[in-house]
Image (cartoon, rainbow, N blue to C red; front, side, top):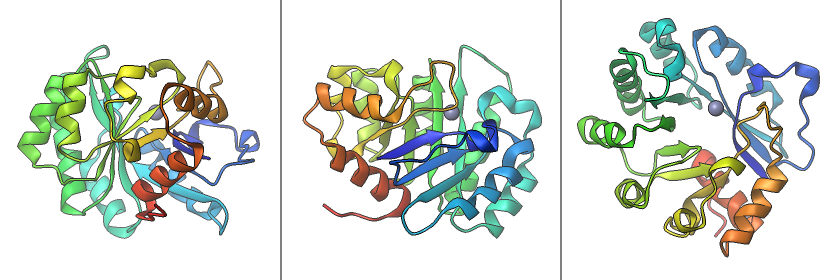
Length: 226
Ligand SMILES: [Zn+2]
């Protein structure tokens, strides 16, 4: 199993439990945890992969530092951009500008992107058009869009990750089955377990646990065992 979205920097270090996991993707949310997040590369080994993302989450726009983000991306070749995004529930007038700036950096350095989007899918669609986002590079984490959104983002070869709270059978079955990932967004207040998420996806689709793992390895590491 692979947890496609969590935040290692928000755990107490002694709370990490990686039993049964082949890997995780951990995102920073603001400039204060970029260096800390980068330090987790040391947790990777032959049987456990840690994929890292640095960026400014839409809730923390006041802390955006474009210059430092660019410098850290230039110096850390395997690091992606995330989690970044748009959130109309917790709005900030600088969100759009900061999101576009980070998308452009991801494009410039050819990095993967992890996106947080809450009630802002039409704005996100406009951004994709404006930035000319590259195919197969984007993970829409905690996806909560409509069938029409899925149609749109499928054209960009987007990947989609789900925790327990946003699983919908019709949405899951409208996404190509090699583009669905399981995540916990931990630490989270509901203490979601990756095993439960995987089980629930299996119940709603004909996707196996092995396929979910393969999807994560393909997106995060470019490994395709299909
Ligand atoms: Zn998150």
